[in-house]
Image 1 (cartoon, rainbow over the protein chains, first blue to last red):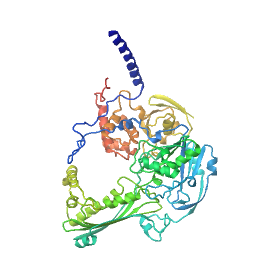
Image 2: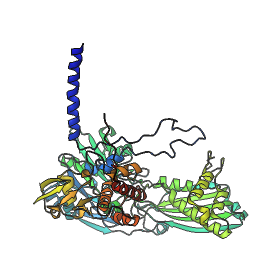
Image 3: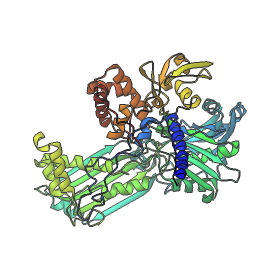
Image 4: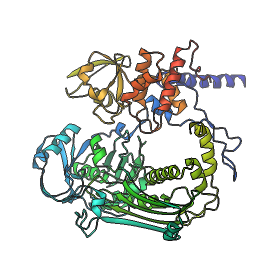
Length: 466
Length: 165
């Protein structure tokens, strides 16, 4: 028995020792494991109870890799034989393409494939209204529209080939202001007889009666500009086909199934043959929710027979991605003498840019939230999104909520100043309470806005400041 | 052309086209992908590395300009004994969210702390002026750098001993 044990010990020692050596050969630092949340008491709160996770310190499980520079973002991935793609941007906001000459680009050594819009099976995509071409053909509606794409062995050659592509444009009139775009004589970005492509109206109670009963009526206009998400990591994707006609796309994208649907529709490839691998995202903020250039890369990869990587330049990030909608908002609010909101009428125009993208979602959310966290018995909200020849507006953190918040909170301050009521008190008077009804008729429960505000006031020292 | 430089204490050499930037040299020729391509025009600081003790934008420096010099990248910061105090503090304070700016910010901070072991908040802000972050903001980073400075100054060993098994 004892002899057996001796033998077993020996065989066990050897591998442990070699493992330890192997560990030392690795350059990974030996560090304490990241702290974890305690499981007692359970973190899932009971009804009406605050979760125990509040106030505890938690560590991101991925931050060790981030700090060590080991996180593999999409641009850190390279496939064997990979080519680099560049998209030639129109540079003009409204035009018709008369001709494209790609012969010089195709003749360049190192250029493996050139793609035009007319070669794409379905050259249109979109999340609600399908109106955006992958490569403009033949109408250019924003300066960031792609007109041709090149895949080459290096990024420099791809760029040089793009520069060698000659495009002849016939200039078209354009419209560059959302209010201007509403006028009947304005240029129609997508033809038809109006630039308005989505509308939402929410009505509750009777605003006219509310205004008639009001002690004061405030009418103000607010504007918020478009904003680029500017994530640190530019849009980057890699497209790779296998010999069975299956497509794999590596992309830093937030909505993988939506990307597969759009790839399937544009490429006419069954969705079961498309795999999208979402890599670690270097900043999204809503801008990486839909496809950008992935079908173009896929077609370039198919033409060239090699994997293709495409990375937006910082300029393309600004002109060829989506931005936050610019909002023009008109707020008319009637209040009683003691500061209670009686009626609110809101009209907002959203600058949608050249294509729809997530405009309908943004418009909907902005309208629903436009009366603020306040009980407004009578409201009338109307919102419109219009096409302009500017960078497409899409989803960005809050989907329209921050824009309307700027408007209603600015007006609350103005009302408080005019009625000589403390701005905090005015808000407290009007806040939602348990059982309050929102503009859309939703009855609210577990409303904690008053307590939250009281806590916040204590924390940032409102009383001492005012 | 042939470029030879010391990267993280090791002599590395590669033959590259003359227009190769230090960033492309590190990422594509040495496969050190910790330095990131954010803008490629010197605005965002995601590509920051330390060359001869100074934090530089690797996208604005040619590989040939770094010939014969000593380069530290994020991969060279941690040792097998443990993380660099900055890495440890950034992890603990949640100063990194998407993490894309992280390597650049950490290296800029290291260059600052090497030169000035006890910087004021104002000095930290000035040093970080060339590093953009879009997720976290800068407050946690600045707090973290103060904390790391304290850790690095204290005589007691700041890092926990490796776990014994």
